[in-house]
Structure formats: C-alpha cells, structure tokens
Amino acid sequence: MPPQTLRIIDANCNRISEGLRFLEDIARFLLDDAILSQQLKATRHSLVRNLSKFGAALLSERNSEGDVGAKIESVSQQQDLPSLITANARRVEEALRVIEELAKLPEISPVLHSKDFEQARFSIYTLERVLLSKVLRQDKIARLTGLYAIIDTQTLGLKDEVDAASKAIHGGAKIIQLRDKHHGKGELLAIAQKVRDLCHKSDTLFIINDHLDIALGADADGLHIGQADLPLMAARKELPVDKIIGCSTATLNQALKAEAEGADYIAVGSIFPSPTKGSTTAIGIEQLCQIRQAISIPIVAIGGINSDNISQVIAAGANSAAVISAILTQQNIEQATRQLVAGIE
Image 1 (cartoon, helix red, strand yellow):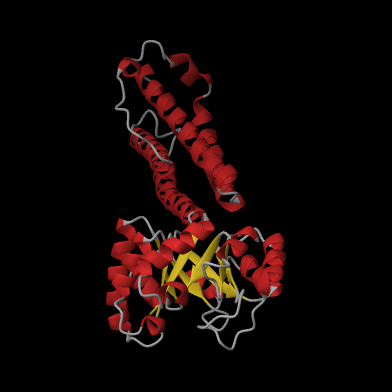
Image 2 (tube, rainbow, N blue to C red):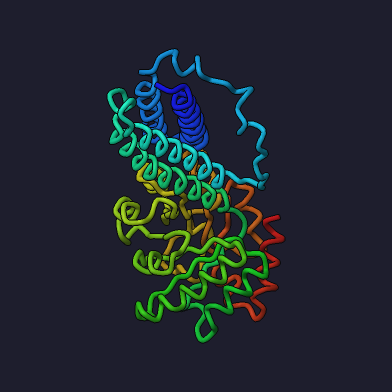
C-alpha cells in the first residue's frame, strides 16, 4: 500500500478520535448526559478499533514534522461553545468521508469497508444535532434569572401585547411569557410571532403559556404548562430538544414530580395573595424555601409579587420572579418594570 495513502488514513484517524473525544467530554462533563456520552464513546471506540487494522504501519508513515499542512495558518475566529461543537463534529464527518472514499480503492477495500464509514458519518450527523440542541437548551435554562414578565391578555385589556412586551423589555425584563385565554389560534399565532421577533432581537427569552402548537408555530424558546394542562412528559416529547419547558407548582410534591418528569424550571406560587389568582391560597416564603432546598432546577416565584416584596422571594432562593398586574396595570409599564428589576438587584 502506498505510504501516502497510509498517511492520509492516519491523519483522518486522529481527526476522528480527537473530534469525538471533545464531543464526548461535552456530553459527559458539561451536560451530565450518560446516554449521549456513551453513544459518542462507543462510536469513537468502534471507529478507532476499525482503523487499527493497519497496526503499526500507520505510525511508521507518520511525518508530523515534514507535513506541509502543518505550516498553513488557520484563520482565527472568535469561538463559543456551540460553534466549537459544530467545528469538531464537521471535522469528524469530513474525516469519515475521506476514509469512506479511500476504502473504495482495491488495495484498501479488503481491510476497510466504505459502507461502515458512511453509516458512521450519518450517525454523527444525528449525534451532532442532539448534542448541539441540548447545549442550546442548557443556555436557555441558565438565562432563567431576573424579572419574568407575563403578558396576560386578559389583564392587559385593550392595551397592545407587543407594545407591553416592548416596554417590559426596555424596563429590564429577562423573560417574556405570552399568556392568552381568549384569542383564536390564528390571531394568537400572529401576536406570538411579533412578540418572538421582539424578544429575539433583544436577547430575551420568549415563553408561550399553555399552547404547545403556538409555541411550535411561533418558534418560542419554550412552553409553560399548568397542573391541568397537557401532561409534562407528553409536552416534552413533542417539543424540540432545544426548547425549555416550565411547570406551575404549588406544593413540594408537585415540584418534585415536575423535576422528575423533565421540567427545565418550575413556577412556584402563589407566594402572596394575588389579584390574578383570587381562588389560590398563598403558600408563603417558608414553603418557597422548602421547595428550593429540595430541587436543583431553577425556580420562578409567582403570585402577588410587587416592588415591596420582590427582594424577599429572591432572598428565599428563587432564580426569577414572575409578575403580571405589578406591571400591566400600571400607567407606565417600563417604569414599573425598572422598579421591580431594581428590587431584584
């Protein structure tokens, strides 16, 4: 076999192993995902074992010092984690394609089977998508902090939903949830798409309350459901893996159940008596503290929160505080939002 061919196989074997190791470590140490890290590890071991059929012949032809490619400078680009995942996955996929083509040569085909590397390449396409989606979802979960403004169309009355969301964002809200109980689906989707565009331009998380179909149609960042809505596990199955899902809870048992079923965050409340939840019993700060000690996912405190008590819920362990009437019923939504954000800070 020509030494140049062995050098190509050796170089691409290294690219495959190194790229997959990076992806595996992200799944293992960053995401804590046992299944995904095992899939990547098994793929790496299988490919390395397959390519080791050449034994020491690959090492004997390696010439790192004389490789003309080592002297070519790569273009330096600012990198974030998603782009690093994509770059390493592409590195593996391209290396697999090279070996897939080389395996068609008559001197290599008795040792390597082209179809094996084609199948591995398509497998990596899928694993890359899943890994990248989970990292993007984790980024959204990390952004569940600060003021969570619920744009409730019933509370708004004749005020415009998009205008109210814009004022809340300018006031410092980090998350916008659109909650609607009376518009038709077509009208609601159009509103949701406008609010989504506004949120995405301002790097604000956008959540749809209750309506899975609207969350999907509007490409929201996530969905929020209540205890009487679509079951959490069913909703999670339908949502793309990069979308977050939150669940309303009022007791410790509900909070534990939501976490076990895959909620990315829970809303806990009503913390205080609330004008928008008149029939709901307030659970108080003490119950919020108990739930915080029992679960590890982010908590959004909700119910009766205003500028006088918002610092209490943050001090009790809530990652975020959700408000409705504290901003929507005020004459100046942006100023009311700023006051609440100041209370959090």
